[in-house]
Image (cartoon, rainbow, N blue to C red; front, side, top):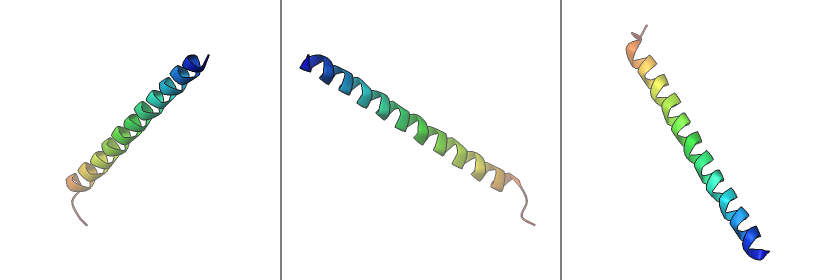
Length: 44
C-alpha cells in the first residue's frame, strides 16, 4: 500500500517537473519573440 502511494507521489512530482519545464520553454519562446519583434521594428 505504501509503495503504491509513493509511486503515485513520484509520478505526480515528475509531471509537475515536466510542466515547469514546458512553462519555462514557453516563457523563453515568448521572450525571444518579443525581443525579435523589437529588433525588427525600427525605433521611432
